[in-house]
Amino acid sequence: MPVPPTPDGEAAPDALPKTLVSGAYLHLRRDIIEGRLAPGAKLRVEHLKDSYGVGAGTLREALALLVSDALVVAQGQRGFHVKPISMADFHDITQTRILLECEALKQSIQSGDDIWESRVVAAFHRLDRAQKRLAANPSERFDEWEDRNREYHQALISACRSAWVQHFLAILNQQAERYRRLVITRKPIPRDLHAEHQAILDATLDRNSDAACKLLAEHIGMTYEAVKQLPATLFND
Image (cartoon, rainbow, N blue to C red; front, side, top):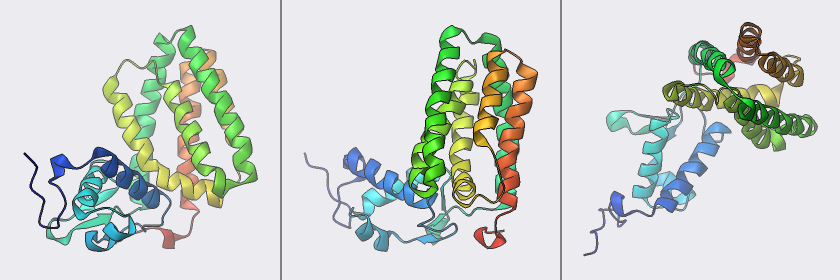
């Protein structure tokens, strides 16, 4: 028996093709991360559904997924808004990430085997290649670099025994992406990311968890210091 349409003429949510929802979700997410949908902006379903070429029901499902990602805020009868960005928010993200990621790295160094080491080395190699291409064209190569950077940090902690820690770190890393893009494309302070990543790799392979965690904390914290140098007009404080 066919599922009855919603009042806007689209199939009920549980009948929507997941590929349509996923496509709208990914498109919206990219536009939020890249700033085409500005932090704090109201997301009007009746306007956006035409821009993204989907029905209102599909768009609402995609927005609900972005709410669960904490990239969109649902405000009751006021609808959806892009989550604002602020120094207070990024400070919270940064400190929590340092706390969890250093613990995850410590556990990985303690329990990681040769396969884990090879995974970390391979991820560093791919990141290093992407870093060189990023230097030549920051705006066009950021997405590639972001993927390789995320893979490197995930590889470092992939031997961590806590699935919950890895889950929460994935969320924090996703939240940091908007801020990281601003830093990578605008370069508010001089920085040698290759050297930072190399130093973390060397200490990790030496199984020196104290040094590796100190370097990792400094590396994550440096991005916060860079964001502090950006124009205040970029933020919703």
